[in-house]
Image 1 (cartoon, one colour):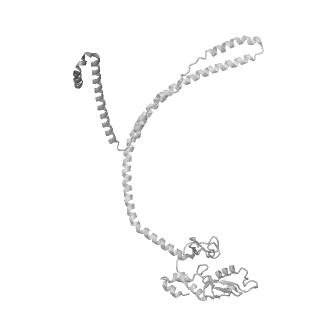
Image 2 (tube, rainbow, N blue to C red; image 1 turned 90 degrees about the vertical axis):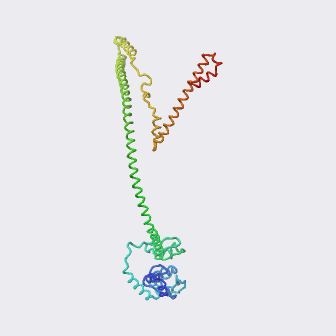
Length: 381
């Protein structure tokens, strides 16, 4: 790999060095031990072993019994195919130079402030960190999802590069917002002043309006109390009359009930002579009670209170018509009333003249030849 040309092109050598130390499989910094392929590309041994195991599922590792030769391995960077020996990935040479560079880089970065919070993990592969960004699906994911999971056919990029791009975009947006803050603050100050003045003026108008309506409320409450008192007085008189009738009818009912009980007892008398001694008097008492129960009654519609009905529709219309600027409307209304009164006065005078002329014609037929004289007379009137 040409580290020198890459470092010269980038203004930040540390960031460019980190890009050169990224594994093409997990897209994270190489994890030691780092192995080098015959095509001179480097891989984490763990990542290389995962791919090798997936491509050669029947290969027996060095711990088990060896019954086959090594398998085939295809470089993920250049697609060059490598024939492994019986040791598999463990037979590849370690790249000590890259490992030393990683150690130096980590020592250099140890002075950087640590980021707060734990690194998010992949939901599909719980042991894998989210370290790449799927450009197709626009979601962060892990390297295992790219190699074996749902993002195999997607285009991915290192998480750091996408992070830097979006961070730069956000910084530009923040700069744009900050540039307009002064202008908005000036507008806010002006609006606050307008709001304050509006509140003061509204408060003054509300106070005056409340005083005027309080006066109307007092007049209405006084009139309401007066009318309610009249209704209450009428109610008490009617209820007293009805209560007296109820007492009279209850007394009559008690008397009738006692007569019924006495009559039933007489019916139960077994002896004819004893029954006859009291039957005639009892029958006479019942007949007199039925004839003498003509007590007072209330007339039909006695309970109605309709004569206390108020026609307040015209007043309600007047109240509904209350609005601001009513003084000008009242002046116009007064002028219209004056005009109507003048027209009515003229019509009445014309009517009097016509009546006088008709009476002249009806009472003095001989005056018909003197019609010009009457016309002159009507004009003078």
